[in-house]
Image (tube, rainbow, N blue to C red):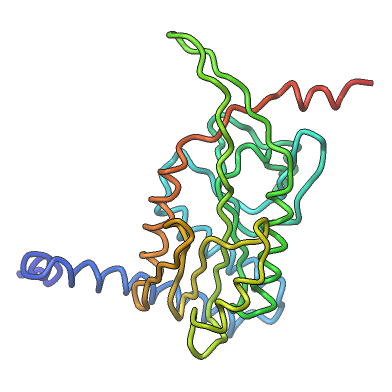
Length: 251
C-alpha cells in the first residue's frame, strides 16, 4: 500500500512541509472556533484559548523552557500584571509562593511574555504593550557563577521578548500601515517584538527591529520557528541573586 505523505516527501519535500504544517494550523483554528461558538462565558473561553496556545507552543519548545500563565515578581517584592503566557527558566530558577494554579515567576527567569486576545486591533495592541511594560520595569538581578575553571562574570540582561497572539486581526490590510501606525506609538518598554493572528499572518522584529512577516496558512509554524531561533540566541537566563530576595525578609 502506498503512503501518500511519504511519496510527497520524496517528490516535493517543501510542499510536504507546507501542507503538513498548514493542516496543524487548521486544527488549531478549529479548536478556537469551537470554543468561540460553544462557550458562553467570556472568561472561561479566554482561559480555554490560552490553554490551546500554551499547548501548541509547548509542543515546539525544548524541555529547558517552561511555559505557563502567571505573575512576574522581582527581588523588591514588586509584581507585574497577570500575564497570559510566560516562557521562563524553571531549571535553575524555581517559581515562588505556589498555590494550586497561582504562582509568582522571578523576573530573572523570564524569556518571553504573550497576551492572548480574540483579535488584534489598536486597543489590544496598547493593552499588550502595557502588560509588557509591567514586566520589563521590574528589577532583575545577576550574579557571577563559580565553575571548575574559575568564575563566570555576572551575565548582562537581555531584553524580554513580548508579543500578542490572537485568532484574527481587525485591520483589512492585516499587519499593514494601520497596524504600523499603532505599533510606532508604543514606547520602548511597551514595544511588542512579535504577533500572530491564527486566521491571518504573523510578524516579528527580531532582525534589528525590522519587520519580518509570515503568511497564512503557515503563519503559525513560521512564528514558532522564528521564536525558537530568537530564544536560542538569548542563551541562558542570568544567575539570580537570591541574597537580594533574602534581604527583603530581614526584620
